[in-house]
Length: 210
Image (cartoon, rainbow, N blue to C red):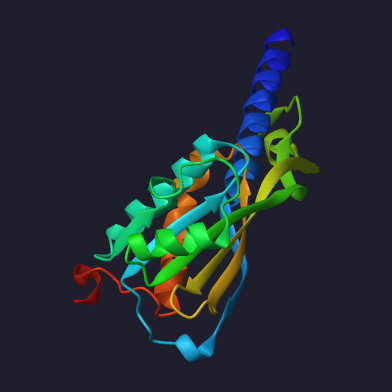
């Protein structure tokens, strides 16, 4: 009897762990939920991006800018991190940003802003075993369903692409990124670049065209 209880308890702990892992992996780390496109710029592929991020910390800002610059440059286009031209932590004046755009010879401004955080709740139904079973029918009849509730925090990120010469909004999108923030920036950058490629605003690498 004790061995059966011990085995049942071990199985229950194992399945509980599996349920938690399934719930966690079921949540996409980064989701771009909404996007808008200025159709006047459709098929206008830009080649020189100026990336400017607005975040609570200098570290997050620079990490976001550097990671996005790297993702854009992998497509064969040029990109500049804003902090290399605007190193201060205070909000820059329009004249300062305009001067930085000219210095970088950029044709677009990619502005990435953290808009806040939200709490998301995911509820799913999972099948789990009972503690004990006897014979083949006990094994067959041991399973029952139970709800699994998981809450997590997400950062709301807005990305906006502007025409650096005419000051027009070209494309904008809103994404949710599961916290902690820093280890999701790479995935966010990859997804954002793919969105710009889908909108035909950013060329794909030569090897992807073949």
